[in-house]
Image (cartoon, rainbow, N blue to C red):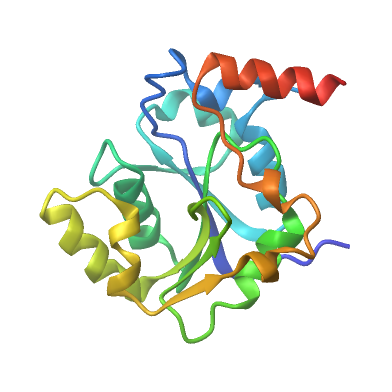
Length: 199
């Protein structure tokens, strides 16, 4: 049975520009439904409250979720700040909307490490993964400092915080963790994912 967390708010960022994709990534058709519903279903099994952060509220009205307009539009860091600022809980778990393989076990593991930290972020062999991660309200001042400077690089946030980096070794028990962090940026990437999924 799914364990619902009441002390963490799920935040899905749906405000991306999707410039390289050419259309809204959240509503790409994945397994017969809008792509972002894949993340939403994992969040609904995990968190008592989920909200969306973005610009186009009307197209999400049917989901019955709280929709937050970006305080600092145009960047993932701004969306992250908005979700955290408005959250009724001390922590949020943030995800991009365009992740075809979100892993609930991995999500729960990251959430379990939050005590004593401003954020919990996975460090894969390739990079840090800021958009499938945990953030605490104590991170808000550092986020605001960057945003007010016009610096939208989430990676510059971590040295300013008590950051729990989750290593490749710690991620290993989650068999598909490599693909858990995949997101889609171009029509070609999405086509490859669809082909691979159907094989």
